[in-house]
Length: 246
Ligand SMILES: [Zn+2]
Image 1 (tube, rainbow, N blue to C red):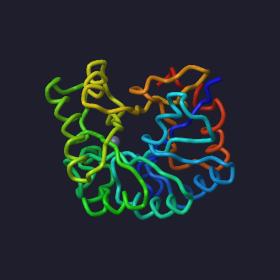
Image 2: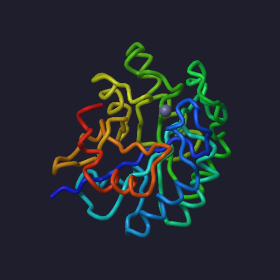
Image 3: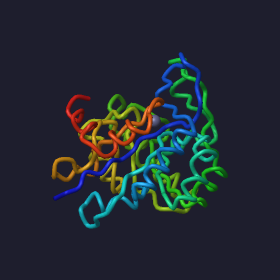
Image 4: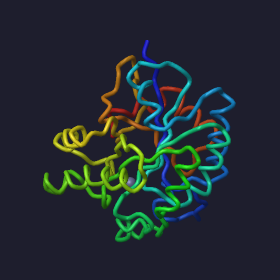
């Protein structure tokens, strides 16, 4: 029987006041720490997408979850990297390659708080903590709304930049906004990526069926994820029931 594998999706780790626009994309650092400690206590190991891939393909079995951070926020380096290293966990940080060291400028018009992204040196530190990086396009674009050649540059160019800058294989992709079309999936495969995550809700390999590695569902962890809800989202069918709704 194929085991269901939650791929956790976090963005920023920060405390935000009530009423903050899109507060749900932040998680207070303490709460994140509690999530990770709960995994540890339950005997689970959090893995980067690179390390998780053999489990997704059914080549390995074990108590594992995928751990992903979208966008590359500097607060992930401060609040996640040392903790994850201490727990022996790894994770994938999806980096927007043309915006390294800048801010989440793609959110600006929506009056979402400006939030610094890691610079080159900080991403190197992130890697030195045993964490991994993946690609999130060059400019955080809506891939399904731009031309095919432009989408191709965003997808393959991001991989090239990150690999030459950090001298590491970048094998994992994440669609910005969770938006993509069939052609984008083919472009991601052709660029040489091994996995791609979406914002489709649910656990991977749910219901005994292997998930497509290029349209992987994830478990979104928003601001108010208390321990019980975290447990339900990760280890019950709580999220899977939502798979076909979003
Ligand atoms: Zn993003």
